[in-house]
Length: 129
Image (cartoon, rainbow, N blue to C red; front, side, top):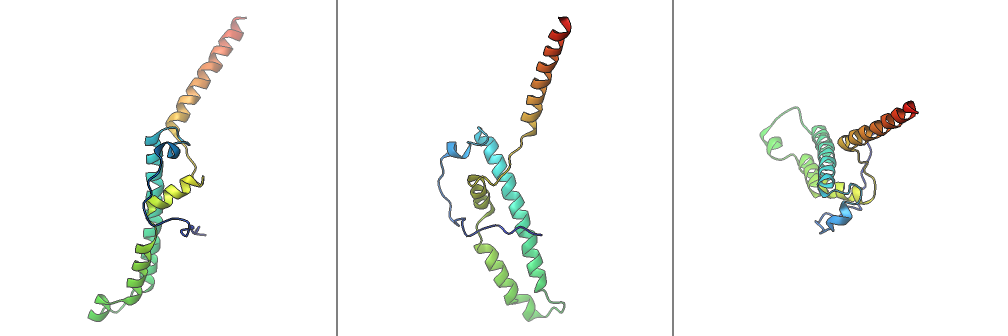
């Protein structure tokens, strides 16, 4: 079932934010921007699919000149989607509310390598005794 985003709490205007507050989770501004960018792309793709689905509901099988130039239902659907908050604003709001999950495989593999090196050192020390 499709999860409905709560867009009523997302403002439709750009707000200046403190960059250090935004980078709390990752401790890196660039990683935060990359994470927000990826989430915004996900939201954008979801909205695009939803928009095309709704437009197809009102599509007519018979094309007349009047219907091509003036399909009121499709125009209203498009206007509704244009008024929705932008995906970047939604992603930022989700981040600030703690709804995003962050995972950096490069950092995880580096930490795993460090742990494995420590384990092998301990095993070497134990075998020498």
